Length: 232
Image (cartoon, rainbow, N blue to C red; front, top):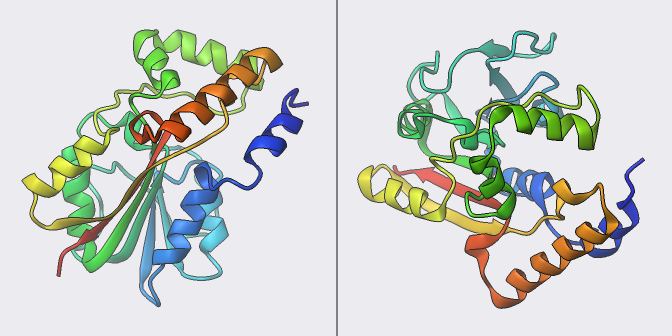
């Protein structure tokens, strides 16, 4: 049982956080017709399932066991096995922090998008305190911490590099590659998920979140939500 569920409901029920904000943004920019790519869909492919009744969605991941009964491809994001201009939308959830060569991935996404198509990305902010700790600790600690806090087999941890996890990266991307323009780039609030094991620490996390939101320090907020459009 989550020991801070009541605090999450109290302070974050009405906020557009994390996956809730991603879903709203996908719906905001969802193309009429066309095909969407879930880039890094995961073994359960929850977002591909969510939108499969509204659009043609192709899931892509490196996982060995991808869902059956849906269009799924096992491949690397830096070498997409699709023709040029294949998709009207590409979206990605908690993937970009794991990319070693984000520029190559963005080039491939750009190639696979139709002109006027959009790429929607939700990823942790490199400068959030959880991300800073992740960068300073070994991978073995990440696995131990996740199992200890969330339970064994909750989800698999992968190495993180945070090479494309700042507003500056995406702004510079549009300067280096003239084929992109930014439609949205915002920092998102989130409850302190890595502090749910302690009500006291969780309350401190909530206070920190409230403070940076009050001061308008979006560069320190836990997540980034980015919408890029492929220029016509």
